Amino acid sequence: ASVSTSMIFAVALLAATVDLSAELKTRIEAAHVPAMQATVVNAEGIVAHGSAGVTKIGSNDPVTNADAFHIGSCTKPFTATILGILVEEKKIGWDSKVVDLFPDWKIRGDYKDVTLADFLSHEAGLPPYGDEEEMKKLPPMKGTPTENRRRFAEYVLGQPPSISPRTQFQYSNADYVIAAAIAEKVSKKSWEELVRTRIFEPLHMASAGIGWPLRVWGHEETNGTLKPVDPHGSYQLQSFLAPAGDLHMSSDDLAEFLRAHLLAMNGKKTLISPATAAVMHTKRKKSGLGFGVATVAGFNDVATHSGSADTMVTVIAIAPHNNVAVVVSTNAASDSATKAVGAELRDLLTRFATPGPH
Image (cartoon, rainbow, N blue to C red; front, side, top):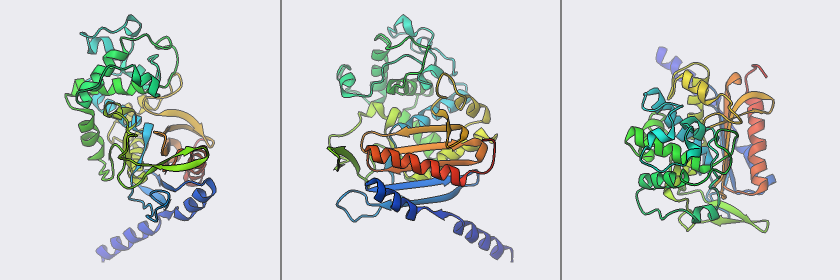
C-alpha cells in the first residue's frame, strides 16, 4: 500500500503546479512580443511555470518550458556564486586585494585597496564597458577566453577609474570579467569549467549553456518594429565577456539556481553556506554581491537582477522572507518587453508569496 500512497502523493504534487501559459499568452499579446517563459519556486521546488508564443516571429514553432533563453547580465549572479564557493574553500577572501593577486601587473595606484567584494558590488570605480566604443579601445584579444580575460583585466586596471574607487556604485561589466579572472587564477580552472561543474551539474541544469540558445531567437526593435536576430549571426558577445552576461537556460533551470540561494538565505547549506548567502545578499552601497537588494512589490530584502544583451530580457527576484523566487524571460528587447516581464514578475511575486515580514 505504501507504494501506491506515495505514487498518489507524487501525482497530487505534480497536479499542484500551476500552469502560467494562458496568462503569459495574454501578456505577450498585450506587449506585442513573440514569446514569454516564467517559473515560480519556493523552498520545495517549482510551484508554477509556463510558456507562450513562438521561437521567432514568422515561425509557428511554439516555445516550451524546456526552451532556453539568453539571460544576459543575470549571468553575473552565477559568477558571484562561483566566487562565494571559492571563498568557502579558502582559495580567496572577499577582502583579497587585486594588487596582491596579480603582483606582476602594472595596476594603477587608484586601485591599490580594491577588493574582490568591490568588483562584485560594482564599487571598484570602473567604466561600464557596455558599448562598442569602449570595446574598440581594447588591445587585440587573440587568446583563449581565460587568457583574454586576464589581458582585459590588466588593461582595465592600468586605465584611470571613471569614478573614485570604493566611493559609490557604478555598474560595470568589467567588474565581472575581472572577478572571473580572479576565480580562474585561484582555482586554476576556466570560468566555463567552473560554471558547469560548480553550478550547472550539481543543480542538474540540463538546458544551461554559454552563448546564444539554439532554438529561441531574440528580437531587436528598429523604428518600432521587432526583427529576429540570428543567434549565429555577427551579433555575439566576445567570449571573454561571458562571465558578465552570456549564459542561456530555461526559466525552470534558472529558478533552480535561485532556489539554492533562497534556501541558503534561510539557513540551509546548498551550493553556498548560509554565511556566504548572508554576505552576498547584504546591501552595500547599492547592491549585494552578484544581486541587487531592493524592495519589490512591497517585499523587502529582495535579491534582484535583470539581463539583456539587446535581443531578449530576463528578470529574476528572490523574496527570502516570503519563501518565493521568480524568473520571467522574453525573446524581445523593446520597452514594452521590458515593462511586460517586470509586471509579470511583480504579479507572480505577489501571488505566490507566503505571509512574512513585508
